[in-house]
Amino acid sequence: MSNNKTIKSRLHILMGERKIKSIHELSRLTGISRPTLTRLYNDESDRLDFNTITTLCDFFNVPIQDLLEIVEVKESKK
Figure 1 (cartoon, rainbow, N blue to C red):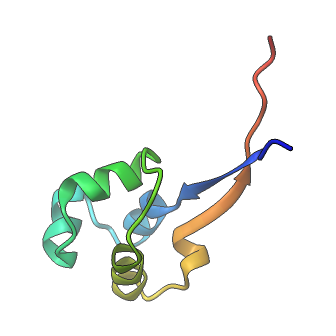
Figure 2 (tube, rainbow, N blue to C red):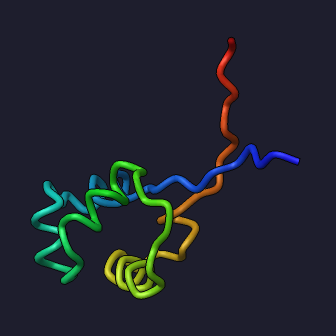
């Protein structure tokens, strides 16, 4: 059985709501490395450290489902 779901980041939404203009600024405010934040922002991560998730949820004062969401993957037509 294939998995037709993936986890998507909502980091861009949270940053926009808080008027954080750059990954650099968020890195400075949270202590999370720029490469880690960039991968999360661009949905390029295939795994995340619990500390990273906790730090971001605490920083934005949101539950995990506001940071990450499970979405259906649309199959490409061939």
